Image (cartoon, rainbow, N blue to C red; front, side, top):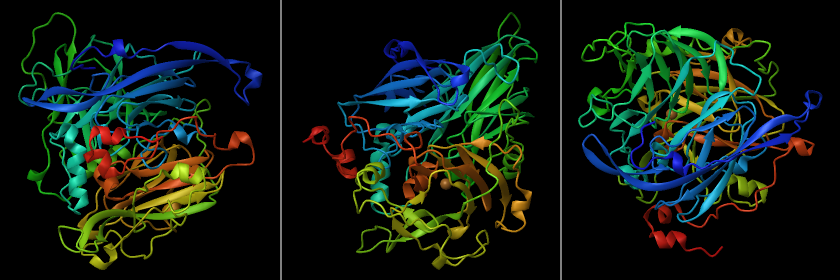
Length: 602
Ligand SMILES: [Cu+2]
C-alpha cells in the first residue's frame, strides 16, 4: 500500500479477542473460536500530489487506499469511524452479507443517515459465508473515490485454500481519480440540481492510489511488487473504480482466476481480466519469466457510445519486479499484446462467460431451482420530466431507471421508516415488469418510451422466497452500456447471460444451474441481459443498484425489503442504541457551514 503521509498502521489500532461462540446448527462440531477485531478508522482531508497537482482528498487513516481489514472466515469486526472531515459520510461493507443486521450496512438514505463531522459511529461487520476478498467503501454521493479499502478473509483455522498455498500475496486496488478532490460531491450536486448530463468525469485511473509512470510526476510513486523467480503469488484485485469497467493484464504472465466477490471459482487461465466496479477477483500469478521488470496495466473498458477523445484513456501502471541480480532491461516490458482495446466487447464477453463457481463438496452451489418470485427489470437511460422550469436544459432532464422508475432518495432512511412504520417515506409498489414490452435493444427507439417517473418505490419479499431477476439492458436514448448490478445483503448466482432481448422460452433452457458464479456485483451487458437467482433468507432492508455511480445518482437503484420469518433467528435484529440522526438535507450537508451541520438538537 502506498501511504501518502503519516504511516497509517499506527492509527489502525486493533485488538483481537478470541471469543467462543456456539454456532447454531454446528453444535455437534462443538464450540468454534471466533476472533473479534477492533479497528479505528479516522477520516480526514489531506493534501496529495497526483499528475503534478496538489489536491485535497478525504481518506481513512491518512492513506489511499485505506487500511486493509484482515480476518478469518466467521470473524467479527467492529470498526469505529471517527469523522474528522468537513462533510457527513457513511461506510458500506461491500460483499459482506451482514445477516439480519442492515443497521450496519451503510448506504445513505437506505439504512442510515450520514455520520456528521466531529462525531463517530461504530459498525459491526459480521463475516459469515464470505471467504477470499471483499472490500469496504464510503456510501454517500461519490465519496468512495478516495474512501475505500480491502477486506481479506482467510480460511478458518484448520481449513485450507482450495488451491496450492501461494508463496505470497499482493493487494491491488484499482481506483479512479477526479481532479475535483473533496469538491467532487459539490460539483456533482450542482450538475444534478439543474438536470445537467455533465456530471463529473474521472480524469484517470489508479493502481493502489497511484497513476503509475505513464503520467507526469509519478516516477517515484509507481507501485512496485517484488517477486522471487519460480514462486506463485495471490493477487487480490479490488475494483474501487467509480464509473467504468476495467481491463487488467501483466506483461508476459498468465493469470489464473481462483476467486471472485468473496467466493471461490473454478480456476481459469487467462491473459487479461475484465473487472467491473464493485467486483473483486483473486488471481494467481507465477513468476516464471526471465528475471526482469514487467508492467501491470489497467485501462478502461468503455461501453458508452462516446467519442474516443471524451474519456480518460490513460493507462494506469505498476511494476512487477523480480528480486535478485540481473541486468535490467529498460523500460519494463509492456503488455502490448494482451491489454484489450477500450471498446473490445468480445474480449470482455469471452472473459465473463468463463466464470464458474468452484462447486465442490466442500464449496457447494445452492442455486434455487424452483422460483417463487420472478422479476423482469429493464435498466435504461431516460428523460425525466422537469416541471416549473427547474432545469437549466429545458423541460426534461437526464435520468436512469429500473422498470421506468427513477429512484429518489427519501429524507429519512428506508430502514428506519420500515422499522418504525413511518409513512410517506417510500411506497411498496416496485413493479415486477416494465410498463411496456418493446424491442429493448433496438436502434432508433421512440423517445416516448424513454419517459420515466421519479419515485421511492421498493420491492417487498417474504422471507425465504426464491427469486429470479432478469435484468434487461435497453438502448433507449442510444444509451445502452454495461450496468454492474450490486446487491446488498446477498450474493446471487448468475444463471444466464446473453446479448439482445431476453427470450423467456428459449433462454431459461440454457441456464447454468450446476456451477453458476456466485457474486455480489455483475454486469448487464450492453444491449443484453443477465439472469440471477437468490434465496431471500436475510431479513432486512437491502439496497441494490448499478455500481457505476453516475447511473446510481441518476436513479438506477431500488430496495428489497425482506420481511421477517417466524422465529427470532429469521428476523431482523433490533437497532443499535445509537444511529446517526437524519438532520441535514442533502444541500445543507454539502453546502452548509460545518457548524450548521453540527447544529444538533438530538
Ligand atoms: Cu449502470
